[in-house]
Image (cartoon, rainbow, N blue to C red):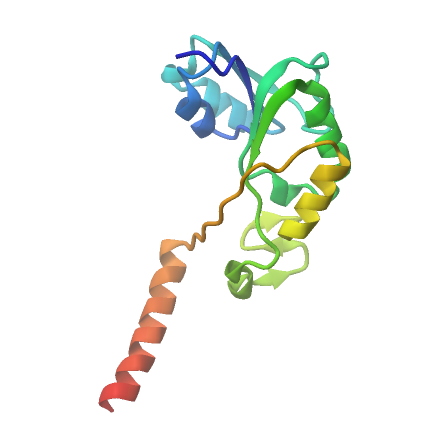
Length: 178
């Protein structure tokens, strides 16, 4: 069904979220700052009919006020150092009772124990910014958003998994059998 109205996929990248929500909205607008990402997303044949693509910054969305019923931003928070202007812009284009769905790295997450930092680059992400749950609640509240629900997940790359698995397995094996 098309009950979600108009969805903005903010930081759309290659269009994975747009493809996932296709069929749940009257229209999807996929926005990313990278022309290459938008080119890849626009090339996906399953997104051609009711998805519109545009290259623009999340800090200067070229839309009128109160246009979108849902704004989805997955994997973009870690690139935003100052959430204030970012959330102001989302609030501007989101309808009054609209929903903002986002993902965010957690400053207190166990994954940060394994982050390799060198300057502003962390595991290939440039200028990554992590926020604690309290940070998010505070800034969302200040900007007029109500945090209704949240969930936590932990992802680790296959490469890192096998490194740690081998290390811990070998250490356990040594302790038990050597």
